[in-house]
Every structure is written in C-alpha cells, then in structure tokens.
Image 1 (tube, rainbow, N blue to C red):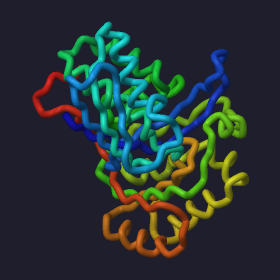
Image 2: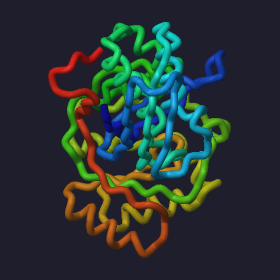
Image 3: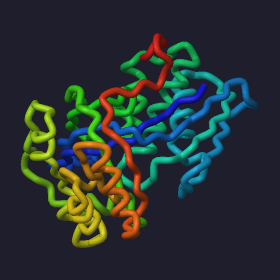
Image 4: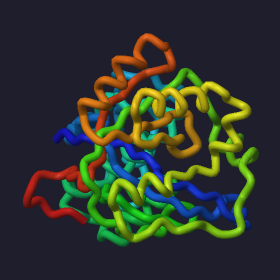
Length: 288
C-alpha cells in the first residue's frame, strides 16, 4: 500500500497565553496544500519496524522519525507485534512550518489502522495522534480547519477554492521552542470571518511569529516582500517558519512569479495549490 501525505499552511496563527503544561493556547487555521510526501507500507516483513527514507535529507535517525514513532505507537496501543517495512519519500521540507512530519505521522496511523482491519476506533486514533504532536490530529482528515487549544481542538472551516500557491523555503532553520520564546502572546484572538472568499482570507492573513522572527531572520521579511512584488495577492510566514507562502489568483500569475523569483536565490520554490479534501485511503475504504 502506498499513500501520499500533504503539507499545510496557516493563514492565521495567533499565539495566546502560555499554559501550565508549557504549551501556548493558539487560534489558527489549517489549510492542506498539494505538496506531498509518499509512504509505502509492506506487511509481513521481518519482525520489527524498518524505515528507509529517500528524498530530502532529514536530521534525525530513522527510529526518531515521526513515521517510525507513529508505527511503533500504533502497534503498542493495539497490542500487535509489528512486521513492517516502510519507505518514506520526502518532498516536503522539514523545519519549514509546513507540517510534513505531522502529516507523515497521521497518514501512517490511518494506513496501518486500515491495513489491520481498524482495531482503533476514531476517538482512539485521534487520541494517539494527539500524543504524537499538536498538528497530527488535523492531518488525520486534512481539510480546511479552524483550531484552538494547542492546535488540536478542530472545527471545520468549509471548502476553499484551489487557489494557486508558491511556497519559498529558505536555507534557514528555526527551532520551534526558540520561536515561541521570541513571540509576544496576545490577550485574545481575532477570529476570521465565516466567509471563505479570497478577499476575506487576504484581509485576515496574520501570523504572530512574523514580528518576532523577521528582525532575527531578515531574509524571511525579504521573501515576503519579494512574493508581493512579483504579484502575490497575499503572503505570510507559515507556522513558525521558515517557509513563506504567496497566494495567487491564477496559475499563470503564480508561474510568472516563480520564474521571476528563481534567479534571486531566495530558497527552494514549491508551486502547489489549496486543497479542500485529501483522501489517504482508496475510495470506498472504511476510514476511521
């Protein structure tokens, strides 16, 4: 079995008060996008969990990868003995604020639950996802979402048009903990309007990490300005960075912008589009 796991962007990210558990309360949007990693699953392999990774280089050993961790957590929770070979093809940059690892973890949980006959009910699967990371529950059923709590209290936002995007990932690494140490929490969030038209989304593009990180990493501010200068209708840092996305009204404008940005050497250019749904499993398959 082979699945694709999408990336995400955040069109709103507000950082609220610090919680007793060390996390911050948040208000944010999750929007899945058509930038994918691939994971292949082979059951009946030698006992244990074997993971190989191709594509983008990752800083962690395979055993520390979220795919391996998700598989190990699934088998431990189900009381099953694993005999699994996994192959991960990475296209989503890591340390980018695009949720690549979280999507890998959620896709692994969904696929293994399907392959083993759904031993975990939806609520149990969601609980396991939450243990693996704050973004992982969103990726169990990727669609535009409003989120609160640490990002795990999800409310459907509704379908969005497939707006073209250009993501720029510079050669900048930002530790999430360090980013939160720089951000200034706000007293209350500004909730985006219920409308999902382009004007409404653009009017509420807002990420509290920008004023915290742009002075420390001026290249990020330069990328945002460059995207707007080449025709993006709006641009924003995704998550705690370091990827910055530009939102365009049509693919031709996006592709022209990419051609103009390419000689500037700002970073990796990743054209993609907004998704309103992503299915991990074949049509008609049971999907806890």
